[in-house]
Each structure stands twice: as C-alpha cells, then as structure tokens.
Image 1 (tube, rainbow, N blue to C red):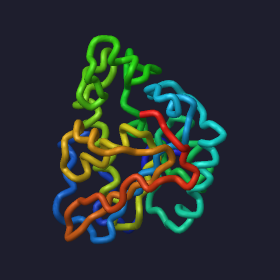
Image 2 (tube, one colour):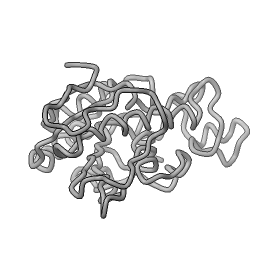
Image 3 (cartoon, rainbow, N blue to C red):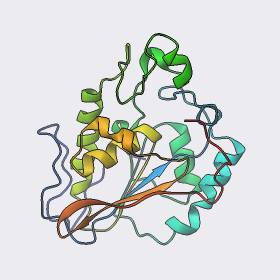
Image 4 (cartoon, rainbow, N blue to C red):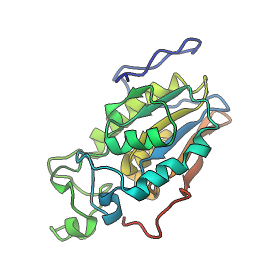
Length: 230
C-alpha cells in the first residue's frame, strides 16, 4: 500500500502533488465530478464525545457493523482513486466497506487537538472558554484553522487530477471531513461548524454547471446509533 497517490494513465492533468497556492476548484469541473467522503465507524471515543486525533483507537463492534453496512453502497462505485487517513479506525472502515485503498494520505488525519486530545467539548469549556468549539476556539499545542486549511487544500488539489476518470473516495474523520466540504465550495475552514457528520456516514461533493457543490451530505449509516455525542 503506497503513501502517495498513484499516477493515472489517461488523466488530462494528472495529480497535483505540490504544496503551492491554496485550493481552488475553478469553474471547469466535469459534470460528473464526485468526491465521496466516508467518515470512519464508531469508536469508544466518538461515542463518548472525546476529541480523537492522534490516539489510534479501534472501531467498536457497532463501528465494524457500520463499516460493513457501507459495502452494498460503495460496491456500486468504480473509483478512480481511494485515499485513506493512516489511522486504523479509517483503514479498518475502508477494509470492511470493501474499498481497496490506493494510498494512505497523512493529510487526511483528524484535526490535531493538542492538549485537548481525549477531552469532551464540555470538559474543554470548563477550562475557561464556555463557548469553545474546534472551529472557533484556540487549540493549545494543536493545529490552527490555518494549519488544517493548508493540508485539506492539498488533498483537494491532489484529487482534482482524478475526478475526470471517475469517483474519488476519501476515508477520513469527522472534523476534517467537514473542513473538506467547506473548502470544496469555497468557504473558510471555520465554516465547517455549519455541517454535521455522523459516524460511518457518506457524503458526496460534486459539481453543477462547472461549479463545486455539495451533492449529498451526511447520509445516515444503516447502523447508526440511537444517539451520538457531539
């Protein structure tokens, strides 16, 4: 399994691998452009609402059921490219969903929560910022919104070289998935707060008349838990 996206014969532009200018989808996207976002299945920490980035927690039994429940949907795709976060919760979700990962992309890891790793939003707010969210607050020893923007834009730049060849699938995490959606349609990273994303949910970023759009968002997993902590 490679850690870099493979080259694609027949692609008009090829993958963009530089760390140059910020992402822009432009106005010439193919009509059938489709980026499928898959959030990993449930973990003990997603269930409890603990912020999980570097901690490499496994899927719960329900999380594995959720991932397997995606297979009938994703089996209908013939992806031009499948990228996954290197975290085992993402890779296991891809495996159970029947996806063949072309490359592991470190830029798809979850927002680095720094000193807030493992804490819930309630616990973080009790530290002194009663209105804190990852999108609006500071993250001591973690990533800023600007840091996350750089790597999310890199991901989107890379996949632009493949969308003419077929759907692209990105297997990742909750907050980074919300940022991918925001950046795709030209919004600020912090506008990711306007999206919600359940465990093992599927979303599709697409195009209409050459313009980047959100085609489908947060399609509930067939094995969604009754209530998930936020």
